[in-house]
Length: 243
Ligand code: PEP
Image (tube, rainbow, N blue to C red; front, side, top):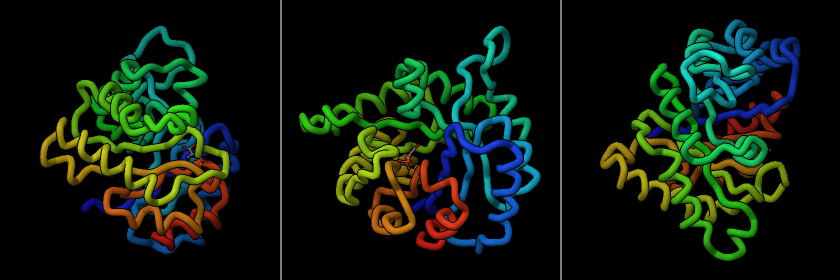
């Protein structure tokens, strides 16, 4: 079984100076635990994190371009992320899908591009409230997963993030998280065979220090992708200690 990954998504928060101060505070507060810790910050802050994070704490981008290089104003390439030492790139976060119209095909292209440059994509999938209320959350999420993994290799992390639980304070139960994580594991086994057993499936959606342990104790959940509770060092230390 893979060890847990505690992946932090700062979204569009903090400045580079605040990132530097956060890294220094983390360095004095963090005791090494069982989980791997990774900070997904706005790309402009990655050099400050590279210089200031405690040894062993990884970092990455919140998105990556599907293109190699060229006339794509405002985009950040996988080669750029890799060059500043990033290990991961989130792709297909629900906020990118919703506000930037990213389709499964675009998400898969981003994941392939990340892998081509040695980054591990964290591919996000998950249903909205209406889909869940119709009871179609498993089939919806698996269809999104298959589309988002088209041509994507095994160096990948999946984050199951039900959209209704992101930033809302509504957390899926540990049983809800496991239901989808198990179904995702099944789909990964169809695509990757035995290697699927070693892949990490994260849960994301209002995870905090007081609920992370029960969710990550489920057999198919191998960590969490955390937004709101990733901003304060005390919460991060609390979650890290709980894993
Ligand atoms: C996220 O942004 O991926 C997320 C899960 O946010 P939050 O933890 O705030 O729900």
